[in-house]
Length: 278
Image (cartoon, rainbow, N blue to C red; front, side, top):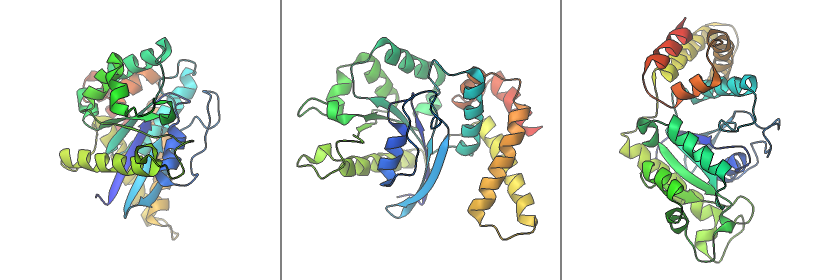
């Protein structure tokens, strides 16, 4: 068990990211939406104590939605960058238990394109809509039957779990089909992965640069009049940094920022990092 864990939730709109966050926390904290144009398709973050340790869940917008405008997507990517800093301990890649259409297959291909080898050391594939599993079928058996999904799970070190935000809420005779059981298993996997990564979190030059800016703002706010809690101070610092980052990274496209966020190093990373630190 780790005292503090930052977990980022990734996936396209409509797969159940916000509902997953609510299921993990056991309360309705995250707004739920099912369309790319929904007001809920924004970066949301909440922190709660779960099993004696603090967990921050960061619900990201649909980075891989094909029908989002450049301006809208870029705005939410920048918000996520400030929420992710200094970096998540774990990424949950959310997919539905379903027959994968070409669109879903393209999303997985895009993930394979953007996500670096380093990223996958911190990633877990989480399937929603577990009620779509056949009777007696496990998520491992479902994964085995789909080559594209199987390859993604393999890149994530074989780490995969399943929940059902709607049908597995109540106590089930079949323990496997219980959210309480599955969330417990998921968090155990998260802790095991953090331990395997020697307690470190995923990070890169850009996230480190943003965290440096945030800590500078924290120091400024602490010196100002007022009696704010440390949590409120950091929230205000992130908000201030976000305003600056929006300006300093105006020249970079959403695609470029995604590439830098989920990869480590490279010319683009150096350029973005330099812009953040200006």
